Image (cartoon, rainbow, N blue to C red; front, side):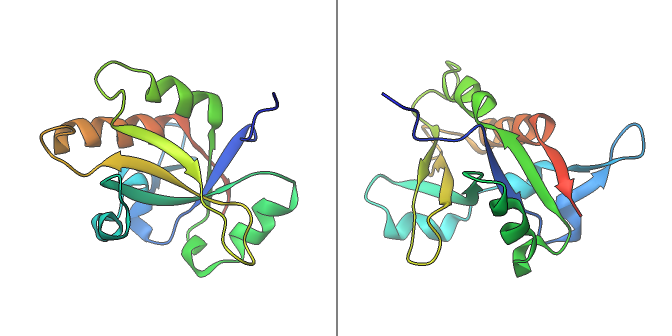
Length: 142
C-alpha cells in the first residue's frame, strides 16, 4: 500500500501575527497560524474543526500556495511524519488528525483536524498542539 500523504504539508501565513522572529533572527511560524477555524465544525459530521493546508504532492504546490491571498506573510512547511507523531500522543489521540479534502481545481487541499468538544480537547491542550506544530514547521517562502 502506498502512502496517500506526501512528506509535508504547507500552510499559508495570512496574518502578520502568524509569523515571529526565531532565536537566530529567522522568521518562524507561530502557534496562532495553526489554530483551527471554529466555524468549520458546523459542516462536519465528526465534530472536528479545520485548519486548511495544502499537501505538497509536487514541487509546484509551494509556488501555487505562495500565490494565494492567504500566504501574504509566507508559507510554512510541516513534515507529515511530525503530524503522525503528534496524532499518536496519548493526550491528543483521537482529538487531533489530518485529512485530504480535495476540491475542484485544488487536488492538494487538506485539513488539520482538532476536536471541537472542549471536554475532549480543552483549549489549553489544543494550544499545546498548535505550539508543537509551530515548532515543527519552517517558513519556506516569504
